[in-house]
Image (spheres, rainbow, N blue to C red):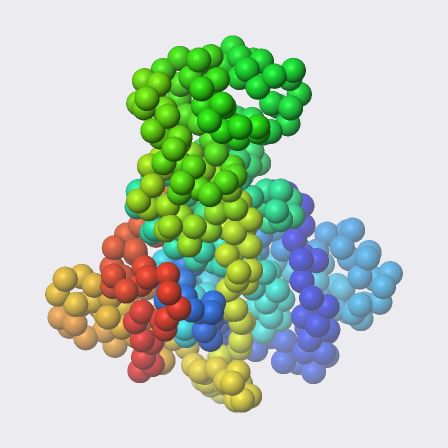
Length: 439
């Protein structure tokens, strides 16, 4: 994606900067933190996603002539503030959990240190990116965990907006999905793409057999044939007759899946197509995938549920000022005290306590020196530090960017999942699988 991201924001961020520039507080060094007060309803862990996208968006957060002219025409801020915005670029530091990391309530997922004006401008960008991507990743990770190693493809582009579709494909891939149907996600983030034919292709032809022959002539017998346009049993028979027993796969998009899949497997085997795989794609979510665990399914395709966070379209993260320097240059912790929306002030660092089996038992948040200080990690306590520097002086660490950063996030997610207690993977409603403790 190219172009300015400066108006991917809410108006009140600019009006706060306008007022702060007027009264002289805009340049106070400040520390903002993005965190979740709670996990999506009933979830036991979350997955951080969107970090690589966010770092690229921050680099594009520049007010160019078109943005400045629109602000001027609509009298959003004072002329003096427009002059400040014309020179805006983020020059601060960002720390956070690695993309793909598991997180829990209170985890300091992103910490942004800069002047108040520089950092407050990023609130909407931070939250819109992390809230959506982490929601998708959390749902996708649950689906991966119950798929029991069977491949899953993301195919939800038609169930969300065009930009969200690309973000969703990336987040799902980080969470363990194997491919996407979205070509832009493939081009931008290096995600493997997949896709063969819809029911429309079958309906285009005079018969199902004609459609199958056309597809096989184009792509060879290893293609995947959609067999449920008319009658599934007849579709299986026709598919094997046309493609032969080397047919790659059949796809089922309707019906009582556990029963239908079993019947299709028996029919394929009876026709000699013992290596032909079965993929299912009918409004799946983590619960329907779990229900198919004993069925002879070889792969899944998931659409609506993954791009909507499987019922939790936003991860519930917030962005709060937690510390600022006073007139003497000392850090002062600040916190919101509103009922049920209180935050914990102070500069923070974080670590995960592991037991002797390398299983996570506690999330520790150290309040004090902050991510650039030395946290009070106890010797021999099996603490794994969680925060890394993502951006220094406004420059992102390239290790977290682009296709390579996406693949690294995917690998880190797999490692983080190995640490979680087995209770984390239960689909029933429950509390976070490990507690968060402040020190």
